[in-house]
Each structure stands twice: as C-alpha cells, then as structure tokens.
Image 1 (cartoon, rainbow, N blue to C red):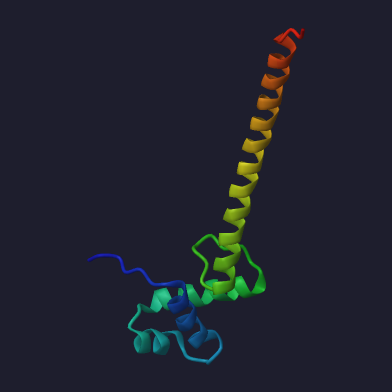
Image 2 (tube, helix red, strand yellow; image 1 turned 90 degrees about the vertical axis):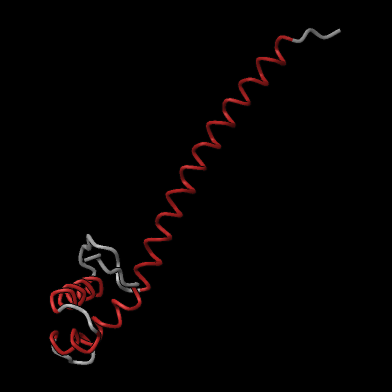
Length: 105
C-alpha cells in the first residue's frame, strides 16, 4: 500500500473540523475518509501551530507554510549577499593590483 499525501489546505480543513466545529476525531476521520490517528495527529499539530508550539512536521496552516517559505527565501538571499560581498572584495583586490602594475608615462 502506498502512502497517501495530502495538501496542507486539506489537512487544515480536516483538523478544523475537530478543533473549530466540534467534531469527534472518529467522526471527522469517517466523514473525510482519513484514518483516525491521522486526523488526531493533524488536529494536535494545528493546535500547536496556533499556540506557537514547536512543530517538527510539515506545517498545516497556510500562514505557517508561507512563513517557512519566506524563511527559506531569506536564507537564500543572505547566502547570495555573502557571495556577492566576497566577489566584490576579490574583484577590488584584483583591480588594485593590476592598476599598481601599470607604469604611467
């Protein structure tokens, strides 16, 4: 049996049935065609996300997905900035040494 993958939006919708709409975990699992333990895990994870707890799994809420995406983008931009700084220092050093080796008339 292959492992099913669910989009964050779907996981959030199922977890909200339990947390916001008052469904029992079993009822939400049956209604959405997902295992009871899976729904329970999603509901606990969404509750942690809402309270600011540490999450190890992939985020459920769209907001947290966006935050994680932006954090990755920030890291990438920081790395690019460091690379460009190093390249600038190297190129300045090369220009200065080349200019010093030219004799003027």
